[in-house]
Image (cartoon, rainbow, N blue to C red):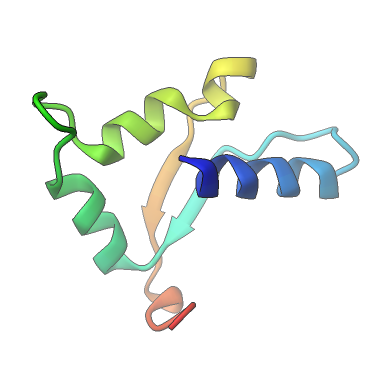
Length: 77
């Protein structure tokens, strides 16, 4: 969660605090992992939790789209 919010915060700051991001691109394997793993003792996926509890949604009501991007395959490796 901290990584997602830090990324959103940095992007928002880079816009001069004029635009809150509404899309986050991740490598396809990462999106698959987030969608398939569940929070402990719940039926909620980590992906759903991130979409519902990020700073864009909580502070501004912005629905964050977390999208797979093939261009990011191998990024951060």
